[in-house]
Length: 62
Image (cartoon, rainbow, N blue to C red; front, side):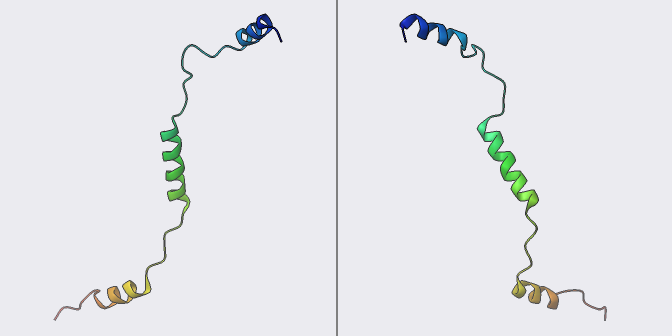
């Protein structure tokens, strides 16, 4: 390929002189993390913690 052909190809597909508006990698990663949190069901309570809370619930008035 000659130098003039190579130059013609590079002029056929020039890079945009103005940055293309898009989404930053930071925003993409944040969106993925948020989607992961939203789509993950809540954890089941720890059995030991559930037993402790059962004993410290509502007390009857004297």
